[in-house]
Image (cartoon, rainbow, N blue to C red; front, side, top):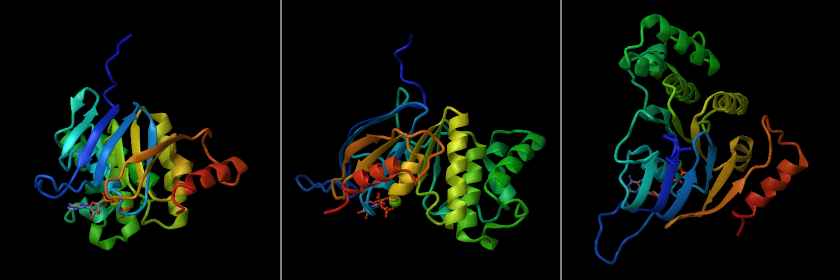
Length: 258
Ligand SMILES: Nc1ncnc2c1ncn2[C@@H]1O[C@H](COP(=O)(O)OP(=O)(O)OP(=O)(O)O)[C@@H](O)[C@H]1O
Ligand SMILES: [Mg+2]
């Protein structure tokens, strides 16, 4: 048996991040001493109040921002830059879609880069465009879409690339309640069908409990940390009307009352 970490496992140790230039003796950390192991194939939710540093932590794992000190490893490798193994769904879809490409072209972009033949590209994009409920909108440009529709294009694109690790930053925040529930359900289905590691950021306790195998609670910033990690002892699909769900909800809520 190998003791090497799986390539879709994430190890974070003593991680510190300050955006300010380092002046001696005057360091303001956004996150400070974050420690976390996310196993390969796990669905991990990061839950915390607005501004605590969730997006910062996700960007550090994605390799978009550089750490101040500490360690972030994916598999055996220290994260230094973005990589094809880690796909990110951003909080704001506008920051990632190509405005000059149609919905279908946006979704197929990564496949085209990988030189996947057109017939196969179409199969994959058809599957994910219809999964996110955008059938019939394939030829529209991002400027012709609503915020929620753009967010769904982003999701379809990321899923088409079939990454080993999915980093999702409040991906459903801009969606109406009904679409949101559909997307939550589909995401769980896709995750269960594959061996993807998912790190999903939200500030919504109900969403965290509907999705996560484990939930990491981040304290409010500055110098935010992961203060508690909950195992969610519920199967899928989850029923938010059960007393057990409510009990877990209250338990997690109690971290944010003060
Ligand atoms: N590029 C940056 N330069 C300087 N400060 C930043 C930068 N990005 C984030 N910050 C600061 O870091 C802190 C954490 O921000 P971050 O976006 O990580 O929080 P968050 O938990 O994702 O919040 P939200 O739930 O509102 O999205 C905030 O105080 C923010 O002002
Ligand atoms: Mg954020």
